[in-house]
Length: 363
Image 1 (cartoon, rainbow, N blue to C red):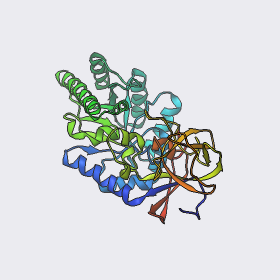
Image 2: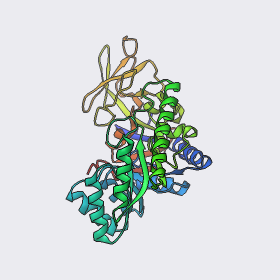
Image 3: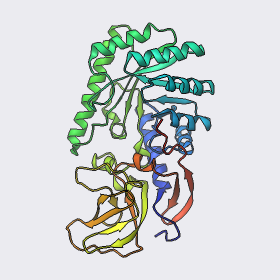
Image 4: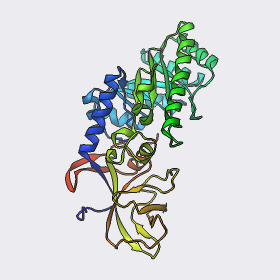
């Protein structure tokens, strides 16, 4: 299996990826929702352009490193999800806007609004903002309706910040594994956003955009009544998290990490893909990835450069030194960020390569 390739190596089944991209765009279009994919999954301008060509309404980035890479390749319509705080971020965002970036920025604090107002005033441009809402992930974002309305009112008083609407990320959704529980969580998120939209309408601050993030939520977007925009990321490749949340099948997983068995012990084997090649995110079932074609095996544990593979039943492993394994990571976004290049393949034919140009961009 790909004996001529060095490992570890990211392989992307192009036909599967293309199918995933088209299916999500078709779903959004059929439901009358705009698609703004999150590029943190692939970190590749080439793949972002493919999403835009299919009909995406701009892209989402997490941080300004990603925004800069995407902008350098002509992608100007970007939502920036991470809070912009501090003079360094202010200077960088202003510089990107001078280069042509048309940002939509998430905020959840007065400090964030003041920073954007200062940039907009300096550049003579109004910056679109979305108020980030905490719908259950308990990360950033506001959850109390009076605070959301007060934040929108504060934004409305600014001269160079324009209130565009609401944004959220349902990263907590689908963790329980039950399809019914996942649907219930999505409907609860939708109900919260509908209630907040109603509060804003009554305050004469109607949200033009209600943006919901997450591939699991987007897969079940027919349950979303208020969302105007979907921001899935993982869907382009899928991973074991989306599979276990019933948002994808194994056949929908386009990206794998090709690895080589480098050592054999009686009860385990060692592959050359460790925590610097695979995600360290776990799953309910345990393990650190799914080995294609070998349901009898699991990636039991990781160190930096070593993956420990064992049999599910604890028996002797039936592998040979030099054997190749393809592993679907639990969380493909963090795995892709560890690599600088991926190969596009069809079965065992290499079709080309994709630069992961924004890999490692965390600023």
